[in-house]
Length: 98
Image (cartoon, rainbow, N blue to C red; front, top):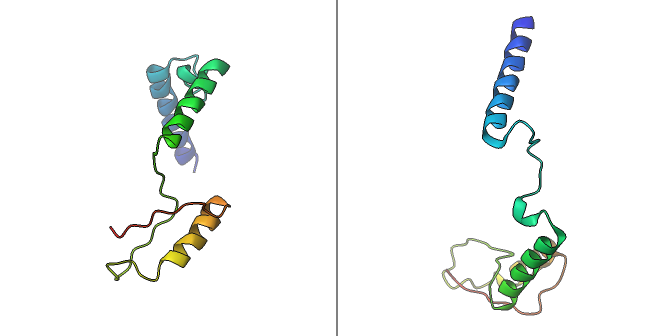
């Protein structure tokens, strides 16, 4: 039992040394990425993401696979799944088969 404990300690120390080599000994690994470290940078990134969404970027919020090539019969199920996944009923829907 003591040998197993010692092996785990050694593996943890080895992993810690590898992380220190990669990120620096002063790094905990939980630091915020440089581009998000300042409030202004975070706001800029949020605005960029919002603009990308508003420009027509699409996000898949529900999906299903079935044996009906046209997707008939899945619309109500998918609308229910969207509401379950996002917490809101969609205002617009694009449904495609494939």
